Amino acid sequence: MNPILHDTLPLPFPADPSTIIWGVYGLVLAVFLLITLVLLYHWIRYAEKRSVFMVCLTVYTAGSSFLIALFTISAFMLTAAV
Image 1 (cartoon, rainbow, N blue to C red):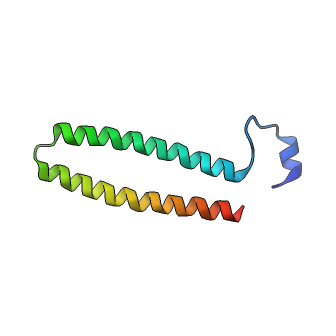
Image 2 (cartoon, helix red, strand yellow; image 1 turned 60 degrees about the vertical axis):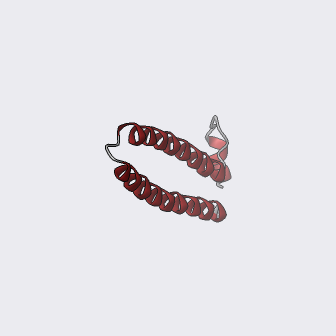
Image 3 (cartoon, rainbow, N blue to C red; image 1 turned 180 degrees about the vertical axis):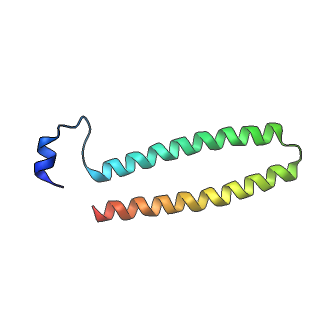
């Protein structure tokens, strides 16, 4: 961390990069969970067939799991690099 820059910019939050990384991670995860709940509600409520619901759920879960794993690994690597 650059002490000159840190002393000249009075920030209203801790300027520790790992805190910011994990804060963004938590915010994105919370938004993701909210979107997931809305999608699940609509898929359960308005799906024409159970098979359509299962395909949507499988594809969404597989893709989301992969992206969340990448995001988590990236956050750990960025935190370790700081």
